[in-house]
Length: 112
Length: 113
Image 1 (cartoon, rainbow over the protein chains, first blue to last red):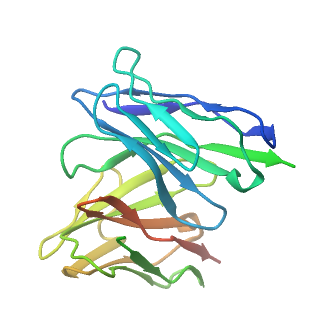
Image 2: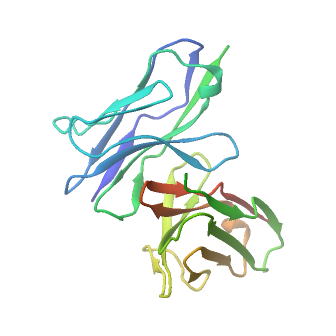
């Protein structure tokens, strides 16, 4: 079935380090891909998305490119901040209003 | 942008009692809302899809008689955990589809003692 696999955490980085969180997917069709962020004690917020192959989503310095050939949507940021500490979820959606399928989440801790 | 309000944010209840969680779309109409459950250190698992004016669609393994969902209006869906037990303690999150994408509530931390 359709699924999302993302790297297990926790990931601990120093401030200004480069971040990569890997995400790969399995889908029977052509999904839209998302990254959501969950700050401590809060719900999920959409970070970025891409709806077709080769699209690049970007927001707040984060980027992810929809790679159909490798079925991947890796999240990157060139210089992380302490305020980026959160849990990041990769997700896919099939169809116009299908439900989201989430990866297990990756906890990121950024130390000053 | 679209806002989904979820209430309460935290609730502690005694084993055997029922708890109702509300999810409201504040500035848009949501014909479909989704209820997720998040276990510690795990991902969000879809419990059910709530459809305005009709019965909810439950995912496999989710007890519909235990997790009652009502979507009586275009802006409100409720999840009632009936006869709660400690194993129902979890983080419950609702979301709704708006033309801009999914919007999530801030979640409800349920603790059953």
